[in-house]
Image (cartoon, rainbow, N blue to C red; front, side, top):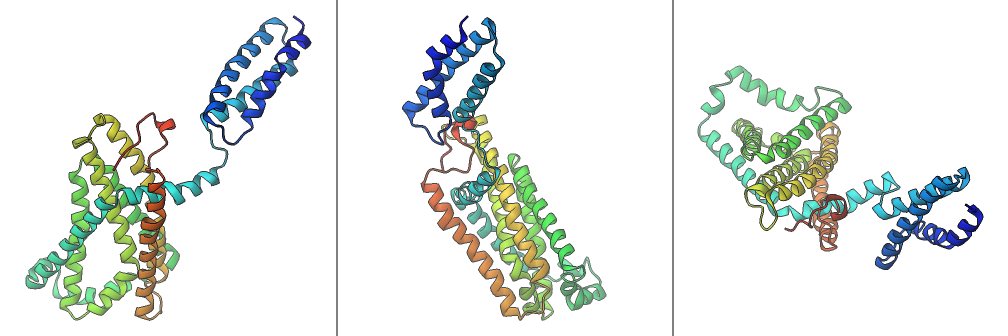
Amino acid sequence: MDLDAYAGARGAQWRRLDELARQRRVTGAEGDELLDLYQRVSTDLSVVRSASPDPALVSYLSLLLARARVTMVGTRTSTWTDLLGFFTRTFPAALYRTRWWWLSTAATSLAVVVLVALWTLRHPEVYTSQLTPGQVNAYVGTDFQHYYSEFPHHEFATMVWVNNAWVAAQCIAFGVLGLPVLYVLVSNVEALGVVAALMMSHGRTALFFGLILPHGLLELTAVFVAGGVGLRLFWSWVDPGPRPRLRALAAEARMAVGMTLGLAVVLLVSGTIEGFVTPSGLPTWSRIGIGIVAEAVFFAYVFVVGRRAHHAGVTGDVSVRDAGDAPIQG
């Protein structure tokens, strides 16, 4: 076989494939052309290999086909670009799309906190049956406040971050079963309600809110988001809508995994506040103000950035191309 003549006859197609493969974006027509040329050049490579293999030509065609494959499957070339896209589009869109689930979870959970606190204030035996008077006095007098300064700031921040991230991960991971999510949520809000009543009944209301609110606003919001996502995951197979049950569950599970990673970052922020701001010597109004700002930024992130991404068609799920599913709605 005359390789020079063969390359001369096929060279135009090879150059066109190279041109298309180097483009960052291709139109629908160009995509069809790319696929057709890819198949043609694949045949050319087989012919060259079988007839009279020329190492240089084989290498050129192999690299050309590899570059074309990257373009066709849309393989991403930048991890940093992926990370930026996740936090500017995917994660906020998922938060916005699931907003009614976690906002309802938050409202219900806070109502339970209030009810538990009121009940405990009227029935102090809730804690006196478990703690001696000395233990109660120690807790409201020093232990509650010293909890936030017992360890070095960076160690404490890491400890609470890991613990809260674990609680959030449990809410999402147990979402398939449903009831365990409710158990985790109720256990946490019940404990918060009892502690609130214990502190308020001993005249330590200002101290309680002064230490809880700086980090607790964002921290509890993240836990409520995790709970809402877990419950939505459970509901996706109970009532999958028009989608097959397994496909609905798979789509919601993919989104839930992504939200777990995003919430870990949110909880890192709340853990940093809890480790460095809550026990600091800043005035109470200043510490609470930092917590309110952090919470406001989170809601702006959801309802400005997330809303924009959602209306642009981002669902929080992986792309249809990668998943093989229809876009998830809701």
